Image (cartoon, rainbow, N blue to C red; front, side, top):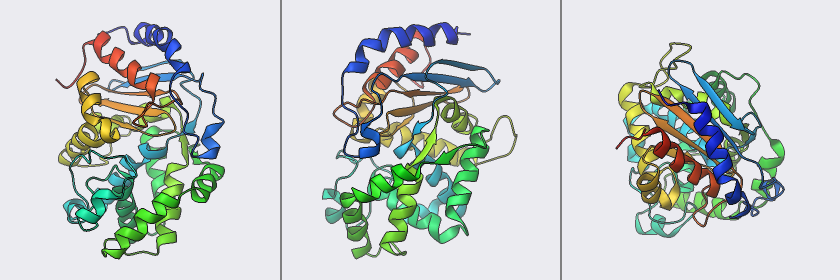
Length: 305
């Protein structure tokens, strides 16, 4: 077995010069003040091993990483019916692009771009009695941390500057692909993006996707094996926006990123790994985090290829 602790510490030192590169997501004012020097990384294995380095227990805004959890809730509720309203193809465009929506009649390319996540949010609103509480309970249960919560200031910051997301929602609604009031969909979407977790939380919280849909320490099933496989496939092809091909080429595992600087990766039947570094590259993914994950799969020899 690889010496995960030594590897994580080595990676932390190697990527330190990269922390000064890239740009923090300053279009969300609350995120603009996060120090770019922050770096954390954690690995959790299916046999219960936990390895961490740097700021791995410090919570940060998970942003679009939350889309994996809302997708999980939607698949639990309506299964493959979801794919009548959202596609499963890479977009090839920025995560907040409106271009394809007009060309494709309001059907978002996948659930991980903003347009697709808004449709998924609409499904969760329709199928859950208390969507916020159930989303939070799912995340707390999967991660084993009952203290995970949202950051209302992040949600307000996003709402005050969420003009493009509002445009996306109205555009999708014009094609009849949103059922709820625009403000309700946006408020739930901003809530999910404002949830705060640490690298340790995220690695533990994604481990069910490495375990064929079953939470390894509770023993209960979150998703069916087929559903877990499909989410992993979507993370590989669509999880890092329009850099998914590059991420697959360099890192070689399913992953989901967020503009808060977090990225979570899954190696099926083995482990989950999470990294956080706030400064982003041109595609909106953590610059040092992407480099750290590339080093991780290279040093451990673990990837899906």
